[in-house]
Amino acid sequence: MKRTKKNCRIFGIALAVAVLYAVVLSSGILYTADQTVADGLYQSERALDGTVIVIGITGEDLENFGVWPWDRSIMAAVLETLNRDEELRPAAIGVDTLYVSHTNPESDAALVEAAKAGNVVLACSAEFDSTLQFAEDGNAYMDDFSLQALDLPFPELREQAVLGHINAMYDVDGVLRHHLWAIPDGNGGEILSMPWQLYSMYCGYWGEEPDYTPALNHSGFWYVDYSAKPGTYLEYSVSDILSDNYDPYLLSGAIVLIGPYDPALTDSFIAPIEHAEQMYGVEYMANVTSAMLNGTVKKEVSDILQVILVTVLCFLLVVGFAHLRMLFMVPGFVVITAGMVGVARLLYLQGRVVHPLWFPLGAIIGFVVAVIEHYAVAAGDKKAIRNVFGRYVDPHIMHDLLREDSDSLGLEGKSCDIAVLFVDIRGFTSMSEGMAPEQVVKILNEYLTLTSDSVRKNGGTLDKFVGDCTMAFWGAPMPCEDPIYQACCAARDMVEGSKELGKRLEEQFGRSVAFGIGVHYGPAVVGNIGSDFRMDYTAIGDTVNTASRLESNAPKGTIYVSRAVVDALGDRADVTKTGPIHLKGKTDGFEIFTLDHLR
Image (cartoon, rainbow, N blue to C red; front, side):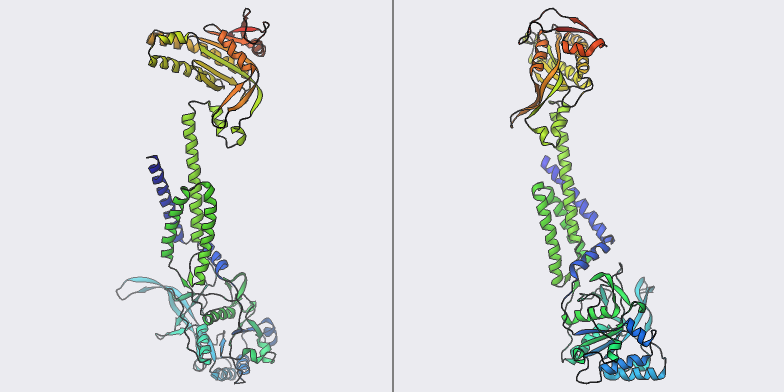
């Protein structure tokens, strides 16, 4: 029954924790942290083969050709230079700048002429906004990608080149991890992205069919596997091309991207492969193009499926860890957590993108909850021990034993000065002979309750019951301000309490009780004494023996104390020196007093 109750409690806790974690995951609170972990785990540099090359519009170019935007004849000259040798021309050239309206007729014409080369992809872009739309059935919905404007090259230029959109859209945390497949062309069709157009053109140049199929989400984006950090693709500047300071063999048959490469041109983003340094838009296009060339397709696993799996995992881990010993929990937790990170990385290499933080964090939560459960159970066990064992052992001793301190549980003792009290029922043996066992036990229990209450009330340590005898001491394990006085107060309370107890027992059983009490003060050895199997927290030594012998000689209702006790009490007590009594093991000169009154 107890185990079933425990299991039900653990299952309830595990279910509650798992459901709460699922709610947290669904809320998106962990998105930024999770994606930051994903960036570090998934995105890594790889060796480039020179297929994709960037020609940057750099700060040096701005000094040479003036403030941007330049006269279009400059870009026309760049395209003509790259294509002047039919044998050494690039397979595809992407121009990552917009030429929307007419400017200078001669410059526009020069650019149109240069675009006729057949290997040029020109940029276009779309502006989106969220608008309220109405479906055919009349229901309203919010369209987050409602086309507001379309920036296309001016008509003459548009007719001479392939168009590819250059839209780059951040994730919600401001990092550019995804790429948009296509944008609407305003006439019911679509315009594919510049990286796809470059990739397709490159395949045609080499007589191959483009076969890259991205894993699009419901919004038309796909996860980009980056190949290079900022600065890796850059090979030449515009000035290098126009001054013939470049190697045409390096660009032959390659994909060339031309675009802004200076902070002043405000075309830069935060990429997942490098958070500390911004990546220029032309480098982003180069990374997307390389992903197509490498055939890396990354499909993001459904969030709903992952939430379900993590919820189940978290539940199982809480239950599993809660049933493991702490010795096995930590290595198990480490292995499981490391394994989850490794599985996330392996899945990524296989083309599946999962949230790398969700699963290890679920394991951490499961582990922490299980640890708390273990400590709660341990605390409950300690409480149960106190409740049950505390009936047999003094609370001070219980506190000392339950401390997680090896010294307190050892066999060694310590020497200290203590006040020791013994109290015994006079004539109990003869009284019990004519009584039923149940009556004897009842009388004994009431007597022991009185003595133990008196000890605890006055801050003493209840050592043991030996038949009808009670032993207690003051000064250990916790120090007392006035151990002798407190011990004598307990003795006084016992004598006074015995009067009322005697009347009550006389009425119930026709029997009465009276106590003999002995109190002594001196050095003793106090500690856990016994064997590894069984030990008692007790005091031993001559002081204990002397207190016991004082008690055994004390008449009914009398408290015998030693000279050490009388000297310590001073004028706080009225005592009477008792006639010569021989105590076993003591000389005849041992002084004994009767405690008459305590102030």
